[in-house]
Image (cartoon, rainbow, N blue to C red; front, side, top):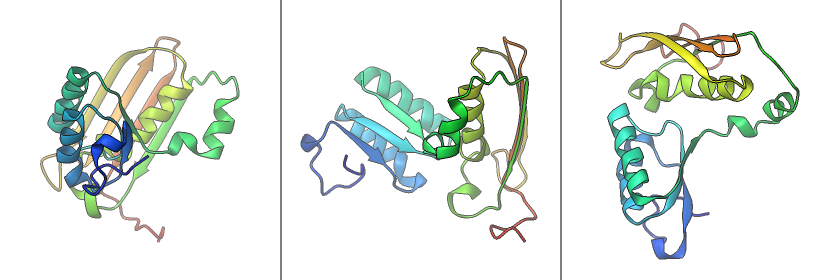
Length: 174
């Protein structure tokens, strides 16, 4: 499929495409393509804020097209293998910390770092979420820089997720 946001590819030539451009450009590109009734896959982080995401989802419903949001983590070989097993987890805990570089300095932690963890938990725990409790603290800017969420599922599983863009560890692990 074409890479969306590529103005050189006429939209008449495709029905669906992948949006891999920088986060700051995704909102306007996605709006343009939704107005043209195109299905789109948006690589995370999807947008710079929740309001933009809600706008795109509203446009998607109105256009009656599909938006797939994702990261590719589910296509990871290890995840595919573990998801084949009949697991019945009772407790899952994740901690996902990163330093602030590029988009990660401005995109809400939940839309970036925590999103994969939420996605994987929902895929592994085959039950409905009954309760969500969360807290986030903004230190660098107005969006939470560290978030802790607790998901309680109908089957009794408890998932605790922590993600933050404030870390004493750089990308090399030192």
